[in-house]
Image (tube, rainbow, N blue to C red; front, side, top):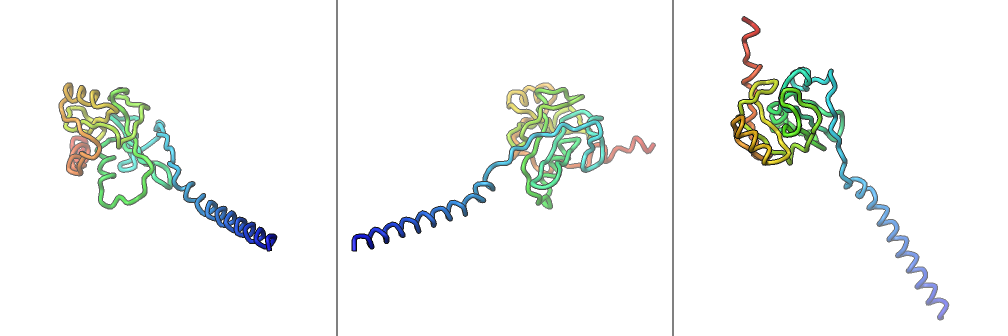
Length: 183
């Protein structure tokens, strides 16, 4: 009787151990999905073009942007108005992994390079006198003091990512309406 009782406990223990192992195996794929994907900004080359208008990024002043998606290669933007116009468009439904902009507190406005930061944590100056590839554009900064200093020197107002609205990044101005080349 005693030997039979030990066998039952041993069988129950083995069954529980087996069930626990199966439960852990079932959770492994979920752990793999939950791991955040680290996205590294890509520095545009001399032949990198804007996804919206085909303009070479390196040919124009002002901050640039890039959107990284779950699938595919990143899209590059020669101007932050274009970047935000794409992000705020109601039809934008692709899953994003990162949005990067250049920190203009650490790079030259006329020839920006490197210094990529997370667009969602950046500070922006709207309404400054500085121009980008498409005319008036937003300036992007990693710190509020840098954004406020820029706004004092160049005009405009410092804002957070969530404060940028579709009407602020209207693409109907700038180069789109420039008729000087057709004269």
